[in-house]
Image 1 (cartoon, rainbow, N blue to C red):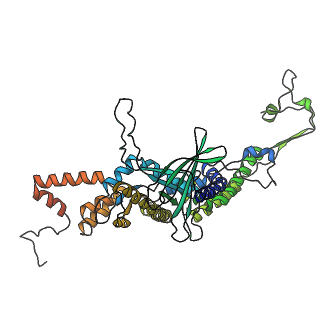
Image 2 (image 1 turned 45 degrees about the vertical axis):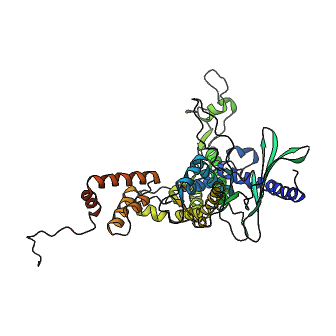
Image 3 (image 1 turned 135 degrees about the vertical axis):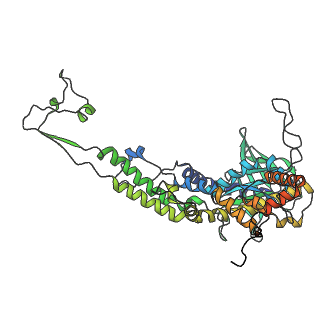
Length: 468
Protein backbone atom coordinates (compact mmCIF):
# COMPACT_ATOMS: atom_id res chain seq x y z
CA UNK A 1 0.00 0.00 0.00
CA UNK A 2 1.40 3.39 -1.01
CA UNK A 3 1.32 6.58 1.04
CA UNK A 4 -1.72 8.73 0.48
CA UNK A 5 -1.32 12.36 -0.53
CA UNK A 6 -2.36 13.47 2.96
CA UNK A 7 0.22 11.16 4.55
CA UNK A 8 2.95 12.51 2.26
CA UNK A 9 2.07 16.09 3.20
CA UNK A 10 2.05 15.21 6.90
CA UNK A 11 5.44 13.48 6.65
CA UNK A 12 6.84 16.45 4.71
CA UNK A 13 5.71 18.94 7.37
CA UNK A 14 7.11 16.83 10.19
CA UNK A 15 10.44 16.29 8.42
CA UNK A 16 10.84 20.03 7.81
CA UNK A 17 9.94 20.73 11.45
CA UNK A 18 12.56 18.23 12.58
CA UNK A 19 15.25 19.81 10.39
CA UNK A 20 14.51 23.27 11.79
CA UNK A 21 14.92 21.97 15.34
CA UNK A 22 18.44 20.58 14.79
CA UNK A 23 20.42 23.82 15.16
CA UNK A 24 18.80 24.94 18.47
CA UNK A 25 19.25 21.42 19.86
CA UNK A 26 22.95 21.36 18.92
CA UNK A 27 23.42 24.73 20.63
CA UNK A 28 21.72 23.56 23.83
CA UNK A 29 23.67 20.30 23.84
CA UNK A 30 26.90 22.27 23.54
CA UNK A 31 25.99 24.35 26.59
CA UNK A 32 25.05 21.25 28.58
CA UNK A 33 28.36 19.57 27.70
CA UNK A 34 30.40 22.74 28.30
CA UNK A 35 31.58 22.83 24.68
CA UNK A 36 30.05 26.13 23.54
CA UNK A 37 32.06 28.83 21.82
CA UNK A 38 31.77 32.15 23.59
CA UNK A 39 31.97 35.26 21.44
CA UNK A 40 34.56 37.73 22.76
CA UNK A 41 34.12 41.46 22.46
CA UNK A 42 37.59 41.74 20.91
CA UNK A 43 38.59 44.67 23.15
CA UNK A 44 41.07 42.88 25.40
CA UNK A 45 41.40 39.42 23.84
CA UNK A 46 42.76 39.22 20.28
CA UNK A 47 41.55 36.34 18.11
CA UNK A 48 44.90 34.51 18.25
CA UNK A 49 44.51 34.07 22.02
CA UNK A 50 41.14 32.30 21.84
CA UNK A 51 42.80 29.08 23.05
CA UNK A 52 42.75 30.59 26.52
CA UNK A 53 38.94 30.44 26.52
CA UNK A 54 37.74 28.93 29.82
CA UNK A 55 34.21 27.54 30.12
CA UNK A 56 32.31 27.32 33.39
CA UNK A 57 29.67 24.61 33.03
CA UNK A 58 26.88 26.00 35.18
CA UNK A 59 24.15 24.94 32.69
CA UNK A 60 25.16 21.28 33.01
CA UNK A 61 25.38 21.60 36.79
CA UNK A 62 21.87 23.04 36.94
CA UNK A 63 20.26 20.38 34.76
CA UNK A 64 22.08 17.55 36.55
CA UNK A 65 21.01 18.90 39.95
CA UNK A 66 17.36 18.68 38.88
CA UNK A 67 17.58 15.35 37.03
CA UNK A 68 19.40 13.60 39.90
CA UNK A 69 16.29 14.08 42.06
CA UNK A 70 13.83 12.57 39.55
CA UNK A 71 13.30 8.91 40.39
CA UNK A 72 10.06 7.27 39.29
CA UNK A 73 9.04 4.35 41.52
CA UNK A 74 5.82 3.00 40.04
CA UNK A 75 2.21 3.56 39.01
CA UNK A 76 -0.74 3.20 41.37
CA UNK A 77 -4.10 2.29 39.90
CA UNK A 78 -7.35 3.71 41.34
CA UNK A 79 -8.42 1.84 44.47
CA UNK A 80 -5.00 0.16 44.94
CA UNK A 81 -2.67 0.62 47.90
CA UNK A 82 0.54 -0.38 46.14
CA UNK A 83 2.16 0.22 42.76
CA UNK A 84 0.77 -1.97 39.99
CA UNK A 85 3.00 -5.03 39.52
CA UNK A 86 2.08 -5.66 35.88
CA UNK A 87 2.91 -2.13 34.76
CA UNK A 88 6.14 -2.23 36.73
CA UNK A 89 7.09 -5.46 34.97
CA UNK A 90 6.60 -3.72 31.61
CA UNK A 91 8.71 -0.85 32.93
CA UNK A 92 11.54 -3.18 33.96
CA UNK A 93 11.48 -5.30 30.79
CA UNK A 94 11.92 -2.15 28.70
CA UNK A 95 14.87 -0.97 30.85
CA UNK A 96 12.98 2.20 31.68
CA UNK A 97 14.81 2.68 34.97
CA UNK A 98 17.76 3.78 32.83
CA UNK A 99 15.94 5.03 29.75
CA UNK A 100 13.56 7.28 31.70
CA UNK A 101 16.52 9.12 33.21
CA UNK A 102 17.86 9.80 29.72
CA UNK A 103 14.46 11.10 28.66
CA UNK A 104 14.18 13.39 31.68
CA UNK A 105 17.69 14.71 31.07
CA UNK A 106 16.97 15.48 27.41
CA UNK A 107 13.67 17.16 28.27
CA UNK A 108 15.39 19.42 30.78
CA UNK A 109 18.31 20.22 28.48
CA UNK A 110 16.74 20.47 25.00
CA UNK A 111 13.07 21.12 25.89
CA UNK A 112 11.55 17.71 25.23
CA UNK A 113 11.94 13.98 24.69
CA UNK A 114 9.48 11.38 23.42
CA UNK A 115 8.14 7.98 24.45
CA UNK A 116 6.97 5.60 21.74
CA UNK A 117 4.72 2.62 22.55
CA UNK A 118 4.25 -0.38 20.28
CA UNK A 119 3.33 -4.02 20.37
CA UNK A 120 5.95 -6.53 21.46
CA UNK A 121 8.29 -8.32 19.10
CA UNK A 122 7.04 -11.45 17.39
CA UNK A 123 10.02 -13.44 18.68
CA UNK A 124 11.61 -13.54 22.13
CA UNK A 125 15.10 -12.28 22.86
CA UNK A 126 17.98 -14.31 21.45
CA UNK A 127 19.69 -16.71 23.88
CA UNK A 128 22.65 -15.37 25.80
CA UNK A 129 26.19 -16.80 25.86
CA UNK A 130 25.13 -19.60 28.21
CA UNK A 131 22.31 -20.69 25.92
CA UNK A 132 19.61 -19.31 28.24
CA UNK A 133 16.55 -17.66 26.76
CA UNK A 134 16.38 -13.87 26.74
CA UNK A 135 14.63 -12.03 29.57
CA UNK A 136 12.08 -10.20 27.42
CA UNK A 137 8.57 -11.57 26.99
CA UNK A 138 7.55 -11.17 23.32
CA UNK A 139 4.01 -10.30 24.44
CA UNK A 140 5.21 -7.32 26.49
CA UNK A 141 4.57 -3.97 24.76
CA UNK A 142 7.69 -2.24 23.51
CA UNK A 143 8.30 1.17 25.11
CA UNK A 144 11.24 3.25 23.89
CA UNK A 145 12.47 6.71 24.85
CA UNK A 146 13.44 8.79 21.81
CA UNK A 147 15.52 11.91 21.20
CA UNK A 148 14.15 15.19 19.87
CA UNK A 149 16.88 15.03 17.21
CA UNK A 150 14.99 12.15 15.55
CA UNK A 151 11.34 12.49 16.61
CA UNK A 152 8.85 15.34 16.33
CA UNK A 153 5.08 15.70 16.70
CA UNK A 154 2.14 17.82 15.64
CA UNK A 155 -0.46 18.83 18.20
CA UNK A 156 -4.17 19.19 17.56
CA UNK A 157 -5.13 22.86 18.04
CA UNK A 158 -8.40 21.73 19.63
CA UNK A 159 -7.41 18.93 22.02
CA UNK A 160 -3.68 19.76 22.47
CA UNK A 161 -3.04 16.04 21.95
CA UNK A 162 -0.58 14.56 19.45
CA UNK A 163 -2.29 14.28 16.05
CA UNK A 164 0.73 12.95 14.10
CA UNK A 165 4.37 12.11 14.73
CA UNK A 166 7.42 11.07 12.75
CA UNK A 167 10.81 9.54 13.44
CA UNK A 168 13.55 10.18 10.86
CA UNK A 169 16.87 8.37 11.28
CA UNK A 170 19.67 6.44 9.59
CA UNK A 171 20.08 2.70 9.90
CA UNK A 172 23.21 1.20 8.37
CA UNK A 173 23.54 4.08 5.93
CA UNK A 174 19.90 3.81 4.86
CA UNK A 175 17.60 6.77 5.52
CA UNK A 176 14.44 5.55 7.22
CA UNK A 177 11.37 7.14 8.76
CA UNK A 178 8.31 6.09 10.71
CA UNK A 179 5.02 7.93 10.40
CA UNK A 180 2.76 7.57 13.45
CA UNK A 181 -0.97 8.26 13.00
CA UNK A 182 -4.00 7.68 15.25
CA UNK A 183 -4.97 4.43 13.51
CA UNK A 184 -1.82 3.30 11.73
CA UNK A 185 1.96 3.28 11.81
CA UNK A 186 3.90 3.34 8.53
CA UNK A 187 7.58 2.43 8.04
CA UNK A 188 9.41 3.97 5.08
CA UNK A 189 12.78 4.02 3.31
CA UNK A 190 14.39 6.75 1.25
CA UNK A 191 14.87 5.51 -2.32
CA UNK A 192 15.69 7.69 -5.33
CA UNK A 193 14.94 10.87 -3.34
CA UNK A 194 11.45 9.59 -2.44
CA UNK A 195 9.95 7.95 0.64
CA UNK A 196 8.82 4.41 -0.18
CA UNK A 197 6.51 2.48 2.15
CA UNK A 198 8.06 -0.70 3.54
CA UNK A 199 5.46 -1.86 6.05
CA UNK A 200 2.23 -0.70 7.69
CA UNK A 201 0.44 -1.57 10.93
CA UNK A 202 -3.28 -0.77 11.09
CA UNK A 203 -3.45 -0.84 14.91
CA UNK A 204 -6.69 1.12 15.31
CA UNK A 205 -5.69 2.63 18.67
CA UNK A 206 -7.44 5.89 17.93
CA UNK A 207 -4.47 7.84 19.34
CA UNK A 208 -0.91 8.42 18.16
CA UNK A 209 1.37 6.08 20.19
CA UNK A 210 3.94 8.84 20.78
CA UNK A 211 3.97 10.78 24.05
CA UNK A 212 6.08 13.96 24.49
CA UNK A 213 7.86 14.69 27.78
CA UNK A 214 8.00 18.49 27.73
CA UNK A 215 9.87 20.80 30.08
CA UNK A 216 8.17 24.06 31.12
CA UNK A 217 5.44 24.27 28.46
CA UNK A 218 3.34 27.41 28.21
CA UNK A 219 -0.02 28.10 26.62
CA UNK A 220 1.54 29.70 23.55
CA UNK A 221 4.69 27.56 23.65
CA UNK A 222 3.62 23.94 23.94
CA UNK A 223 7.00 22.69 22.75
CA UNK A 224 8.48 23.79 26.08
CA UNK A 225 11.64 25.60 27.02
CA UNK A 226 15.10 24.38 27.98
CA UNK A 227 16.12 24.70 31.61
CA UNK A 228 19.49 25.92 30.34
CA UNK A 229 18.16 29.13 28.81
CA UNK A 230 17.95 30.87 32.17
CA UNK A 231 21.70 30.65 32.75
CA UNK A 232 23.23 30.79 29.26
CA UNK A 233 23.89 34.55 29.18
CA UNK A 234 25.31 34.58 32.71
CA UNK A 235 27.48 31.58 31.86
CA UNK A 236 28.89 33.36 28.82
CA UNK A 237 29.65 36.42 30.92
CA UNK A 238 31.45 34.32 33.53
CA UNK A 239 33.38 32.51 30.78
CA UNK A 240 34.60 35.84 29.38
CA UNK A 241 35.71 36.94 32.86
CA UNK A 242 37.58 33.67 33.40
CA UNK A 243 39.22 33.95 29.98
CA UNK A 244 40.44 37.43 30.82
CA UNK A 245 41.70 36.08 34.15
CA UNK A 246 43.66 33.40 32.28
CA UNK A 247 45.30 36.05 30.11
CA UNK A 248 46.03 38.27 33.08
CA UNK A 249 47.60 35.34 34.91
CA UNK A 250 49.77 34.55 31.90
CA UNK A 251 50.90 38.13 31.35
CA UNK A 252 50.74 40.02 34.64
CA UNK A 253 50.70 37.54 37.55
CA UNK A 254 54.52 37.26 37.52
CA UNK A 255 56.18 40.64 38.13
CA UNK A 256 57.57 42.08 34.91
CA UNK A 257 61.28 43.06 34.93
CA UNK A 258 62.95 45.89 33.10
CA UNK A 259 66.59 46.56 32.25
CA UNK A 260 67.94 49.98 31.25
CA UNK A 261 71.36 50.45 29.71
CA UNK A 262 72.04 46.76 28.91
CA UNK A 263 72.74 45.11 25.57
CA UNK A 264 72.00 41.69 24.17
CA UNK A 265 75.59 40.66 24.79
CA UNK A 266 75.11 40.95 28.56
CA UNK A 267 72.86 37.87 28.58
CA UNK A 268 75.39 35.10 27.92
CA UNK A 269 76.57 32.07 29.88
CA UNK A 270 80.07 31.47 31.23
CA UNK A 271 81.23 30.24 27.82
CA UNK A 272 79.90 33.31 26.05
CA UNK A 273 76.89 31.59 24.49
CA UNK A 274 73.69 33.56 24.13
CA UNK A 275 71.07 32.61 26.77
CA UNK A 276 67.65 31.48 25.69
CA UNK A 277 64.87 33.99 26.32
CA UNK A 278 63.29 31.97 29.12
CA UNK A 279 66.66 31.44 30.84
CA UNK A 280 67.29 35.15 30.83
CA UNK A 281 63.78 35.84 32.05
CA UNK A 282 64.01 33.47 35.01
CA UNK A 283 67.70 34.05 35.80
CA UNK A 284 68.47 34.20 39.52
CA UNK A 285 71.46 36.55 39.20
CA UNK A 286 72.04 39.19 36.57
CA UNK A 287 75.52 40.72 36.12
CA UNK A 288 75.84 43.57 33.65
CA UNK A 289 79.00 45.18 32.26
CA UNK A 290 77.61 48.70 32.11
CA UNK A 291 77.93 50.28 35.54
CA UNK A 292 75.12 52.72 34.72
CA UNK A 293 72.64 49.96 33.78
CA UNK A 294 69.55 49.68 35.96
CA UNK A 295 67.45 46.59 36.74
CA UNK A 296 64.04 46.62 38.39
CA UNK A 297 60.56 45.14 38.29
CA UNK A 298 56.99 46.32 38.04
CA UNK A 299 54.41 45.47 40.67
CA UNK A 300 52.46 42.28 39.90
CA UNK A 301 48.80 42.73 39.00
CA UNK A 302 46.16 42.04 41.65
CA UNK A 303 43.80 39.42 40.16
CA UNK A 304 41.29 39.46 43.03
CA UNK A 305 38.87 41.52 40.94
CA UNK A 306 38.31 38.54 38.65
CA UNK A 307 37.22 36.38 41.59
CA UNK A 308 34.83 39.12 42.67
CA UNK A 309 33.29 39.23 39.20
CA UNK A 310 32.88 35.44 38.91
CA UNK A 311 31.43 35.24 42.44
CA UNK A 312 28.94 37.94 41.46
CA UNK A 313 27.84 35.97 38.39
CA UNK A 314 27.54 32.83 40.53
CA UNK A 315 25.23 34.63 42.94
CA UNK A 316 23.10 35.81 39.99
CA UNK A 317 22.87 32.22 38.68
CA UNK A 318 21.84 31.03 42.14
CA UNK A 319 19.13 33.70 42.25
CA UNK A 320 17.78 32.77 38.81
CA UNK A 321 17.86 28.98 39.24
CA UNK A 322 17.32 28.46 42.96
CA UNK A 323 20.54 26.44 43.18
CA UNK A 324 22.31 26.64 46.54
CA UNK A 325 25.58 28.56 46.29
CA UNK A 326 27.57 25.47 47.27
CA UNK A 327 26.46 23.85 44.00
CA UNK A 328 28.31 26.65 42.17
CA UNK A 329 31.57 26.19 44.07
CA UNK A 330 30.89 28.88 46.66
CA UNK A 331 31.58 27.28 50.05
CA UNK A 332 31.00 28.71 53.50
CA UNK A 333 33.09 28.27 56.62
CA UNK A 334 30.29 26.66 58.64
CA UNK A 335 28.68 23.44 57.29
CA UNK A 336 24.91 23.84 56.85
CA UNK A 337 22.53 22.09 59.22
CA UNK A 338 19.86 19.66 58.03
CA UNK A 339 17.20 22.36 58.38
CA UNK A 340 19.43 24.84 56.57
CA UNK A 341 19.92 22.42 53.68
CA UNK A 342 16.16 21.94 53.37
CA UNK A 343 15.52 25.69 53.35
CA UNK A 344 18.40 26.30 50.95
CA UNK A 345 17.01 23.78 48.48
CA UNK A 346 13.35 24.83 48.67
CA UNK A 347 13.21 26.37 45.19
CA UNK A 348 15.19 23.52 43.64
CA UNK A 349 12.80 21.01 45.23
CA UNK A 350 9.79 22.90 43.89
CA UNK A 351 11.35 22.92 40.39
CA UNK A 352 11.67 19.14 40.59
CA UNK A 353 8.09 18.74 41.80
CA UNK A 354 6.77 20.86 38.91
CA UNK A 355 8.67 18.75 36.42
CA UNK A 356 7.39 15.58 38.12
CA UNK A 357 3.82 16.75 37.54
CA UNK A 358 4.40 17.37 33.83
CA UNK A 359 6.46 14.23 33.25
CA UNK A 360 4.12 12.19 35.43
CA UNK A 361 1.23 13.02 33.12
CA UNK A 362 3.30 11.88 30.13
CA UNK A 363 4.21 8.58 31.78
CA UNK A 364 0.57 7.99 32.78
CA UNK A 365 -0.52 8.44 29.15
CA UNK A 366 2.25 6.02 28.19
CA UNK A 367 1.04 3.39 30.64
CA UNK A 368 -2.57 3.77 29.52
CA UNK A 369 -1.34 2.95 26.01
CA UNK A 370 0.51 -0.06 27.43
CA UNK A 371 -2.65 -1.37 29.10
CA UNK A 372 -4.63 -0.73 25.91
CA UNK A 373 -2.19 -2.93 23.95
CA UNK A 374 -2.26 -5.63 26.66
CA UNK A 375 -6.04 -5.65 27.28
CA UNK A 376 -7.22 -4.79 23.76
CA UNK A 377 -9.53 -2.03 25.02
CA UNK A 378 -9.39 1.26 26.89
CA UNK A 379 -10.10 1.21 30.62
CA UNK A 380 -11.74 4.54 31.62
CA UNK A 381 -10.69 4.04 35.26
CA UNK A 382 -7.03 4.41 34.26
CA UNK A 383 -7.51 8.16 33.84
CA UNK A 384 -7.12 8.23 37.63
CA UNK A 385 -3.74 6.49 37.54
CA UNK A 386 -1.10 8.06 39.79
CA UNK A 387 2.63 8.25 39.13
CA UNK A 388 4.76 7.57 42.21
CA UNK A 389 7.96 9.59 42.57
CA UNK A 390 10.68 9.52 45.19
CA UNK A 391 10.81 12.64 47.37
CA UNK A 392 13.12 15.12 45.56
CA UNK A 393 14.24 16.64 48.87
CA UNK A 394 17.38 15.48 50.67
CA UNK A 395 16.34 14.84 54.27
CA UNK A 396 18.73 12.90 56.45
CA UNK A 397 17.94 9.32 57.39
CA UNK A 398 17.46 10.39 61.00
CA UNK A 399 14.95 13.07 59.96
CA UNK A 400 12.93 10.59 57.92
CA UNK A 401 12.88 8.02 60.70
CA UNK A 402 11.98 10.57 63.36
CA UNK A 403 9.09 11.97 61.30
CA UNK A 404 7.78 8.48 60.49
CA UNK A 405 7.87 7.38 64.15
CA UNK A 406 6.04 10.51 65.30
CA UNK A 407 3.31 10.15 62.66
CA UNK A 408 2.76 6.47 63.48
CA UNK A 409 2.70 7.11 67.22
CA UNK A 410 0.19 9.93 66.77
CA UNK A 411 -2.06 7.65 64.75
CA UNK A 412 -1.80 9.87 61.67
CA UNK A 413 -0.23 7.16 59.50
CA UNK A 414 -0.27 3.36 59.58
CA UNK A 415 3.06 1.54 59.62
CA UNK A 416 2.77 0.67 55.92
CA UNK A 417 2.50 4.36 54.97
CA UNK A 418 5.56 5.14 57.11
CA UNK A 419 7.53 2.53 55.14
CA UNK A 420 6.56 4.32 51.94
CA UNK A 421 7.58 7.71 53.38
CA UNK A 422 10.94 6.20 54.33
CA UNK A 423 11.55 5.50 50.65
CA UNK A 424 11.39 1.72 50.80
CA UNK A 425 10.65 0.08 47.46
CA UNK A 426 7.46 -1.92 46.86
CA UNK A 427 9.47 -5.16 46.99
CA UNK A 428 10.95 -4.31 50.36
CA UNK A 429 7.60 -3.16 51.74
CA UNK A 430 6.11 -6.53 50.82
CA UNK A 431 9.02 -8.28 52.52
CA UNK A 432 8.62 -6.18 55.68
CA UNK A 433 4.89 -6.91 55.73
CA UNK A 434 5.60 -10.64 55.39
CA UNK A 435 8.11 -10.49 58.26
CA UNK A 436 5.63 -8.62 60.44
CA UNK A 437 2.84 -11.10 59.64
CA UNK A 438 5.17 -13.99 60.48
CA UNK A 439 6.10 -12.34 63.77
CA UNK A 440 2.45 -11.83 64.67
CA UNK A 441 1.66 -15.44 63.85
CA UNK A 442 4.48 -16.66 66.08
CA UNK A 443 3.71 -14.34 69.00
CA UNK A 444 0.60 -12.19 68.43
CA UNK A 445 0.86 -10.18 71.65
CA UNK A 446 4.54 -9.31 71.21
CA UNK A 447 3.98 -7.94 67.72
CA UNK A 448 0.98 -5.86 68.77
CA UNK A 449 2.78 -4.55 71.85
CA UNK A 450 5.77 -3.49 69.78
CA UNK A 451 3.55 -1.42 67.47
CA UNK A 452 1.76 0.18 70.41
CA UNK A 453 4.93 1.36 72.13
CA UNK A 454 4.64 5.09 72.54
CA UNK A 455 1.04 5.32 71.34
CA UNK A 456 -0.50 4.94 74.81
CA UNK A 457 0.72 6.22 78.18
CA UNK A 458 2.58 3.71 80.38
CA UNK A 459 0.61 2.11 83.25
CA UNK A 460 0.60 3.99 86.56
CA UNK A 461 2.28 2.05 89.43
CA UNK A 462 -0.10 0.92 92.21
CA UNK A 463 1.84 2.77 94.93
CA UNK A 464 2.04 6.07 92.97
CA UNK A 465 0.83 9.24 94.67
CA UNK A 466 -1.95 10.13 92.24
CA UNK A 467 -2.99 13.23 94.04
CA UNK A 468 0.47 14.74 93.90
